[in-house]
Image (cartoon, rainbow, N blue to C red; front, side):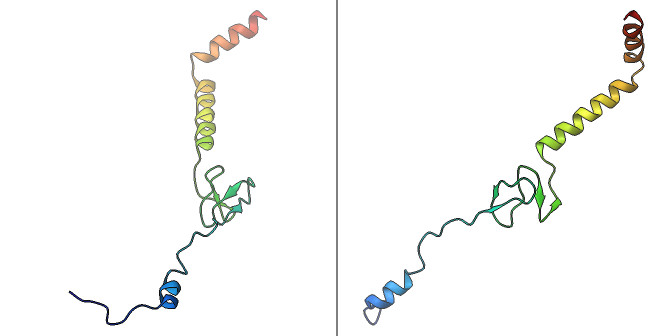
Length: 90
Protein backbone atom coordinates (compact mmCIF):
# COMPACT_ATOMS: atom_id res chain seq x y z
CA UNK A 1 0.00 0.00 0.00
CA UNK A 2 1.43 3.42 -0.93
CA UNK A 3 2.64 5.59 1.88
CA UNK A 4 3.62 9.30 1.70
CA UNK A 5 7.38 9.70 1.45
CA UNK A 6 7.45 12.97 3.41
CA UNK A 7 5.24 14.67 5.97
CA UNK A 8 2.80 17.21 4.47
CA UNK A 9 3.71 20.61 5.85
CA UNK A 10 1.17 22.77 7.66
CA UNK A 11 1.40 25.35 4.92
CA UNK A 12 0.65 22.88 2.13
CA UNK A 13 -2.16 21.26 4.13
CA UNK A 14 -3.77 24.63 4.89
CA UNK A 15 -3.43 25.83 1.27
CA UNK A 16 -5.30 22.75 0.11
CA UNK A 17 -8.22 23.46 2.43
CA UNK A 18 -8.25 27.23 1.80
CA UNK A 19 -10.95 26.91 -0.89
CA UNK A 20 -13.28 24.74 1.18
CA UNK A 21 -15.64 27.37 2.52
CA UNK A 22 -19.20 28.51 1.93
CA UNK A 23 -19.80 31.49 -0.30
CA UNK A 24 -22.88 33.70 0.03
CA UNK A 25 -25.51 32.95 -2.59
CA UNK A 26 -25.66 35.53 -5.38
CA UNK A 27 -29.14 36.98 -5.83
CA UNK A 28 -30.42 39.36 -8.51
CA UNK A 29 -33.84 40.86 -9.17
CA UNK A 30 -36.18 39.93 -11.99
CA UNK A 31 -36.45 42.63 -14.66
CA UNK A 32 -40.24 42.13 -14.96
CA UNK A 33 -41.59 41.51 -11.46
CA UNK A 34 -38.62 42.77 -9.35
CA UNK A 35 -38.61 39.67 -7.13
CA UNK A 36 -35.30 38.10 -6.03
CA UNK A 37 -34.05 35.46 -8.48
CA UNK A 38 -30.88 33.39 -8.76
CA UNK A 39 -28.68 34.52 -11.66
CA UNK A 40 -29.01 32.61 -14.96
CA UNK A 41 -32.30 31.06 -13.79
CA UNK A 42 -35.80 31.67 -15.18
CA UNK A 43 -38.08 33.61 -12.82
CA UNK A 44 -40.63 31.11 -11.53
CA UNK A 45 -43.16 33.85 -10.78
CA UNK A 46 -43.44 35.58 -14.16
CA UNK A 47 -41.57 33.14 -16.47
CA UNK A 48 -39.18 35.75 -17.92
CA UNK A 49 -35.46 35.26 -18.63
CA UNK A 50 -33.29 38.04 -20.07
CA UNK A 51 -36.39 40.10 -20.88
CA UNK A 52 -38.16 37.33 -22.85
CA UNK A 53 -41.10 35.13 -21.85
CA UNK A 54 -39.70 31.58 -21.88
CA UNK A 55 -41.85 29.76 -19.33
CA UNK A 56 -45.62 29.33 -19.12
CA UNK A 57 -46.57 29.92 -15.49
CA UNK A 58 -49.51 28.63 -13.50
CA UNK A 59 -51.19 32.05 -13.71
CA UNK A 60 -50.82 32.08 -17.51
CA UNK A 61 -52.48 28.66 -17.76
CA UNK A 62 -55.35 29.77 -15.50
CA UNK A 63 -55.95 32.92 -17.56
CA UNK A 64 -55.91 30.95 -20.80
CA UNK A 65 -58.33 28.39 -19.36
CA UNK A 66 -60.68 31.20 -18.27
CA UNK A 67 -60.58 32.75 -21.75
CA UNK A 68 -61.43 29.39 -23.33
CA UNK A 69 -64.39 28.95 -20.97
CA UNK A 70 -65.71 32.45 -21.72
CA UNK A 71 -65.26 31.89 -25.44
CA UNK A 72 -67.04 28.52 -25.30
CA UNK A 73 -69.89 29.93 -23.20
CA UNK A 74 -70.42 32.82 -25.60
CA UNK A 75 -70.77 30.58 -28.66
CA UNK A 76 -72.83 27.73 -27.21
CA UNK A 77 -76.38 27.66 -28.64
CA UNK A 78 -77.86 26.55 -25.30
CA UNK A 79 -76.56 29.55 -23.35
CA UNK A 80 -77.63 32.17 -25.91
CA UNK A 81 -81.47 31.71 -25.66
CA UNK A 82 -81.32 31.74 -21.87
CA UNK A 83 -79.52 35.08 -22.00
CA UNK A 84 -82.11 36.48 -24.40
CA UNK A 85 -85.00 35.36 -22.15
CA UNK A 86 -83.38 36.96 -19.11
CA UNK A 87 -82.88 40.20 -21.02
CA UNK A 88 -86.49 40.27 -22.27
CA UNK A 89 -87.89 39.70 -18.74
CA UNK A 90 -86.06 42.74 -17.37
